[in-house]
Image (cartoon, rainbow, N blue to C red; front, side, top):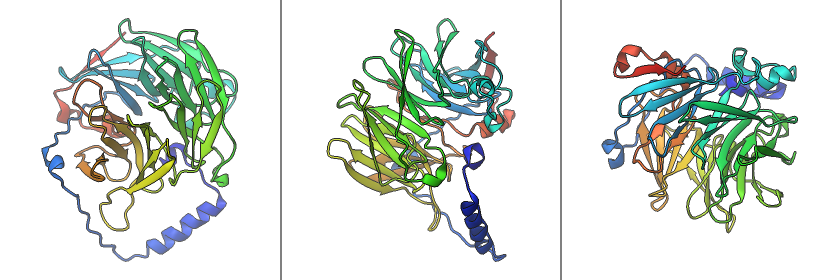
Length: 387
């Protein structure tokens, strides 16, 4: 992720030099990695589907009716619709809709991030809305893009103002979409019925003043009172928004780098601590934290949990991570992790996907790995392009 949105300064760079110089002294380093195998691991079967043409296939949602996987790509401005039964993938290009190359960054005269000069929208996160359409944060274009899977039609809603990089989106019980806005340190509220967006400025307080950006990241809705909770990755903060008054309150979790957090049915907020290699549970009614260190492959290695999802039936927590090509399953009743090694999933990170109706787990892997993979190994996959 460093090349994606790395942030550093002279002091940190000097520390890197010292650490690397001392660590790589010319002597071989012996390490023995061990995969912890549980009965659940041995019974598991992992199926992967190739994403044709994908470069940054970032987020996936399962349609609750047709069971297909809908994946958005952050560079190609395409949606991949995968049928897990026929193993066919349809490519649906997103039209320009008056968004220029380089999106809002080009309009504002800003450097276009991460080499996205041939992109307009930079699709990032999506949710299936109560009206049957998908609502997508277009990070580069600065819009909420709405996709109708029945008609294959699109509409675009600019977030407006000084906002930059709409990130993660969730719906509440009233059908309102809430989303983080990463670079400009804000949260958005989008009403599909009116097309109106309200932008909430977040506090400038931070536990990492050297980081520069605050980077609001994950977001979710409490099942207890409907409040909106978010994380600020580089500020090491989490926060709560009152959905009626839009008042903001922030907290300091025992988690470095809180990312894509999610609620369980009891109102526990599960927070991936990306910088600590831990899973943190916050009881939002008592504000008590519990930290669970994630399994390492060997002493001294680290893990980097990225996103979590909660199984709606069993209330178990699933986690993707960056460092070891493994999926993690946490059983809260036993306070136990189960690990699932992935055969060819380089840098599994974006999301864990738990469909509401089907007992199937899909983890979206590194898009570059998916794009590079040898086609001959996946001869059962076929491709259709929507025009």
